[in-house]
Length: 516
Image (cartoon, rainbow, N blue to C red; front, side, top):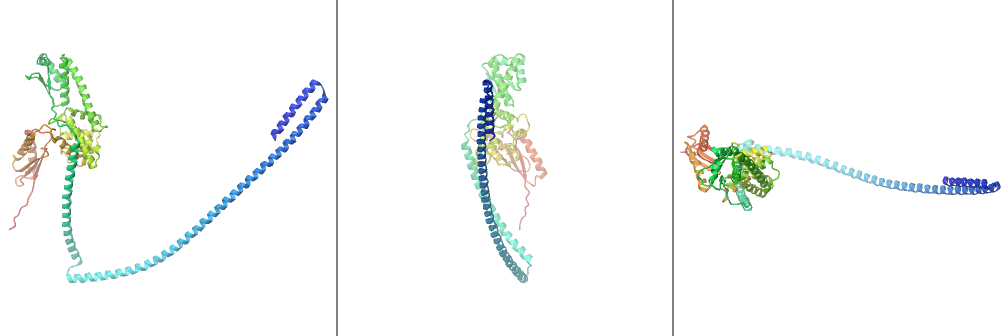
């Protein structure tokens, strides 16, 4: 309505302005008055039309509002009726539930009353039975002249004897059965592991000699007044042996990596032809860098071949050094990879973690890389090294126990011991002959039997352990300790052997009597 009034006002203003301008131009007041009156008449008509239209719109809006209010009221009433209906249904259910509970309570009260009466009867019957048992017990004691405690004890002793005998028989039978099954299963697992592990049947020899083109080079290697050979030995830490052997120079060192570095350096010097102290130092440094790179690559390749990718860098380096270490002609790094594979196969068959077993097998001979630098058995040295670089206790223990230096207390340790024995004893693995092996065992037994009071001697575990049985009437407990020390000292003085030898002196006390 306001819009219509505004339009009308604008129209009036426009009309008035037009009339005034026209009257000013023409100067005719009468014509202006007539037009102004006409405009007013039109404006009144338009205002009236606008007012009527506004009233119509107002009535329509009121009607729509009333219809909406009526619909909302009807919806609210319907919803209220629905809720009242649901409440009535819920009240009916609750009343039915209460009635059911009341009936159940009545039934429980009746049952409780019945049980109370039955409990009274049972208690009365129990007292009667107790009195009857007491009378019967007294009568039995009078007839047998034994008290109740004596009869009970006699019955227990009889039953205990029978049960003990049966239990012993069951235990013995079970042990025999378990041993047979374990032996059979162990044979199957070991044979399967040996079949699945494809290893090269070759023995490797440590090369300590360097071929030279002619014997004239020996003089150049020695140098004026021996300065070249002294420089070479000081820089490399390897003894250089130059003798009458034609076209051969021998390198001697307990460190296999140092010996290999010296070999590479000497071959490069011979190929270069310029042999003097400064050139020797330069060539040895290059050879050292080359050998260290080969050592690292060998360790990384061994770890990759066995599927182990999180070894400490120092362990990888030490593992790679086993590439130049041999044991009875068998390359120790190749042996370690083979042991790792065997451990993984056997662990998978037993349901043990194959990764842990494979890792322990790969690292079991780690100490052989530094056993010339650190005193002690290589198993203990390797275990200390693995412990220092964060290996798990189960792996450290397996390394330490694989030669019996400590008793194995885990399945992984036993698997490493078995795999190590399999790898070392397979045909072609090691260069030691059966004759030398038997001679070493016989020598151990001979040394122990030579002492007074020794009855029998047994060399065990491939010569790593000696059991000495002594006569108890000739050797006392204190003398047994001294005897073990003397035998171990004599073995150290007279024999050469890998690892260590454990001497066990066994003294048995016996009590003998004669029945006449």
